[in-house]
Length: 144
Image (cartoon, rainbow, N blue to C red; front, side, top):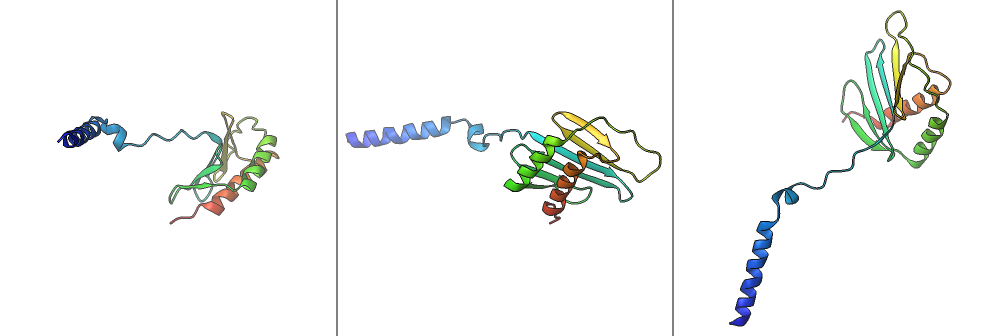
């Protein structure tokens, strides 16, 4: 008889503990840590109406999007990360460039270390970074 009382007490305490657990803790997993942006490229305009975006996070993953199609998240290889970091070390953002007269110009906007600069012509230090980020877009972005 005593064993039944102990068993019953264990069952009741287990049920009470289960019902006293907050529902929110059971329903939702912990929120993921916010991603920190390393560098972002945005290409807009041109005859084709580009609106491409490449965001590289400090963890080595990228978010790729185009005017049409899905947004794609991928992670870079070690070699790609290493090459990009080398090019970013030489990057000189400078100042934004005024929009030229005429139409169909491609506007490049780079955001790096909290600074955002837009240009219509690529400088010597911008070219390797922009070309590398465009390669990521071509390699990893594919509509499903």
